[in-house]
Image (tube, rainbow, N blue to C red; front, side, top):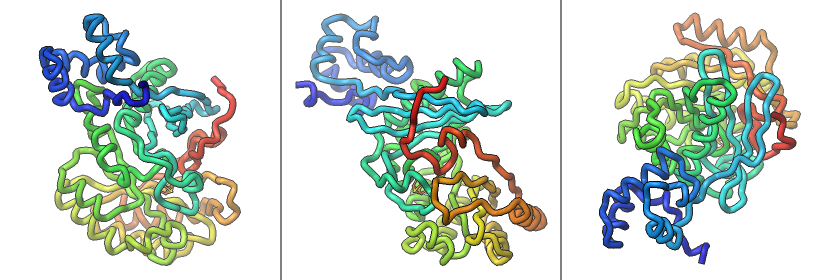
Amino acid sequence: MKDKKKDIRALTKEQLQQFFVSQGDKSFRGTQVYEWLWGKGAHSFEDMTNISKDTRQMLNENFVINHIRVDQMQRSSDGTIKNAVKLHDDLTVESVLIPTPSRTTACVSSQVGCSLDCKFCATAKLKRMRNLNPDEIYDQVVAIDNESRLYFDKPLSNIVFMGMGEPLMNYNNVLKAIEMITSPEGLGMSPKRITVSTSGVPKMIKRMADEEVKFKLAVSLHSAIDEVRTSIMPFNATFPLNDLREALEYWYAKTKSRITYEYVVWKDINDSRRDVEALVRFCKYVPCKVNLIEYNPIGDDHFKQAPESTTNLYVRELERNGITCTVRRSRGKDIDAACGQLANKSKEVAV
Ligand code: SF4
């Protein structure tokens, strides 16, 4: 029966080789099929033209290829593309392609919904339904790479795990996906072009450091004062800033990789001099840079973008203290594709 079949891409290369040996075939056959599945992106066993018909039929009887499907694609007036991606069990996640003159960046999802409950985030309202499998994360990247080549005439250059979900709450699958994205059998991308953005789960940050991962780390900080951060990111009560600081110091000691802090400035929430000073202090613990991000409304009156003068105060004080910072304009706002806006609201395909 179809639902008894196993997702073939859940197998490692070694497991696939062993499967073929157990069928009386050569382990090399496993390598060939693996290449079709990952490097060549085969959607069906029929595509595997250098595999005999009998073998393809045998694979068909035992396995499925659970490919994602880009169900809807929307294009923003600024060129940003948002994909609504249908999974094999009919759930939907979203991923975004952000083009700039120098690069094209994929923002991918790691969970359906999210385990956390950041008050300013549209995804949080969906709650977590399940983790994405490594192949579902990988497929989002492949789909965006194809769109980048088609619409912008260049391959995808960067990936950020900043879509739906907290990547460190789906750690193993995110790591497996990154392994395939960076492997020569997959997309062969440099890990230095990949950023995992977390709301800050100290235990997992330390684990990543221990495993000496080569990708970059970003932290959605938004406040360096515990009570303010807890009011907008309630899990901060469980993982307070001191624990986060300790984990980040550990990360830097092991990896020597600078951290990026993502920070939105909201009116009446984190717009006082005390907030600015707390951020400057926090930034001195570990080498870092700060991205001040323009806020994208999600229909909640509580969160309003602070005036430009407040952002300028942050920039001035950070720079005065030797901390690199950039102000990031929001992209894809008109199609709800901007940071914190992903909530499966895709409408008409607007190409
Ligand atoms: S901001 Fe990120 S971690 Fe927080 S609820 Fe949204 S998707 Fe989850």
